[in-house]
Length: 335
Image (cartoon, rainbow, N blue to C red):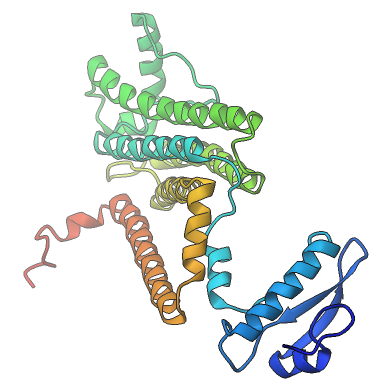
């Protein structure tokens, strides 16, 4: 038996011989509670330390609201860092975010096809809400006449027919309207899930960030298009393209939005019950296992960063037509 005081707890002498220190701290509500940090030279799972931990937990739980017993196990720290604290069923929210990420990925591909078909400068105006496409012949002629006033049409030696203009116009129009569809597909479910209490409060700031990224993406898109519509481009002898820097910014924002949607969806893809079981599993990991998982995590982060850099540099390559410098892929010249 351990020597005890009149409070039923082990005496300070015994405690001090088995732990680094014990301190009294003031709780925000005014109470004082005891915090014990287990840093014994013996195993943290020894009968003595387990007994001390249980008795201190029981005392704090029965007398102090929200009292905390501090431990220094690396497994518990890993569980709190790596696993979200979901208390509601967020699986429907994660599925919605995955759908949004798929729509963003589709929009990126449509944007690439818009560039390949040289359609990006066919629409010379922009508005937040957008508009209906031309329907009648007069509507088409009005859009076509507006397009003819800009440098790209002048550079094409005025050989484009109305049907050819319709082709490139529809590509750019579809790209822009798809962006608005993605925006509506994000905002309306966000409002619905928030009203139903299905989104944890600590994730609302993430949702606001995603909404802001989507809105900013539209502004960046128009900022990019404007770089190919200016009067300063009339003297260009090469094919008129948008600024590579603005193109890279546009693609980078789209990729970042996609990645954030996937990351948030994965965080919300587990039920509270499965998270509890997983958190308990992480707490049972040995230090060597946690170290191995940490290396895997950092390795994945490094590969992701390299992939992002490759995507961004690809925008510069495309924007500067750098790929045409070497047409012997995968070799550089004849090397």
